[in-house]
Amino acid sequence: MNKKISVTQKSEGREFIVSAEIISLGGDLLLVITGGKAHIGSVSISQYHKDKNDPNRMTTTTSTIAVLGEKEEIITRDIAAFVSEKTAKNTAVIAGMHWDLMSKPELLKIYELLEELKIKIIKNLKEE
Image (cartoon, rainbow, N blue to C red; front, side, top):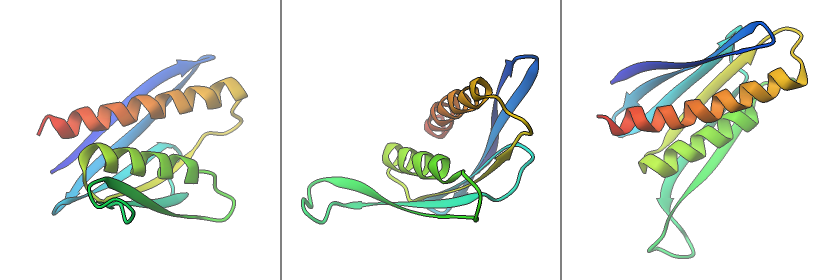
């Protein structure tokens, strides 16, 4: 299963699109999140496993690596943990997004888009 989904929003005359490509790797998931000028900014992997302190409880553990100077680690960590928890699958997220000269309100719009994209990812995965 490979799917590509997108969310779009206009702000101050500019259009912002963030996209996720969902790739199934056996029982695991790989998500590639892009927007604006795509690149690799950060990679996070969330492992779904039994809690070491309570074997009756499942949890996720997330590891992240970011390219120096990039800021996507917050995005990849959040989305990897969220998707792993909701799907009970190990999940890797690669993200890189760049738009020139963004205002603070525009940056906040991007975070809103990413929240919307997370929900859309889960809905798409549940439709299978």
